[in-house]
Picture (tube, rainbow, N blue to C red):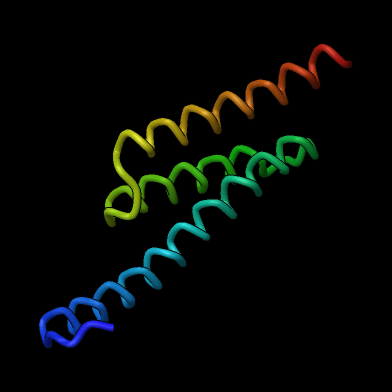
Length: 93
């Protein structure tokens, strides 16, 4: 436990930021999972869910929760997963 006043304040700030970042990160992951599952289900709103997932990733980047390169990697991986699901659906039909 810190006993320096500035460090005590820094710990409080870090805690608040961690909780704020946690909710942003959780929302981002939820949207990503929902988008992929909607494509697996072949739902008509799958494109909209994908758009919202990408939007959440961009928002997390803008807020500084994740790095810009990490956002690019996440979006790329998401698009690859969606493309793989669509390819599997087309080859299976």
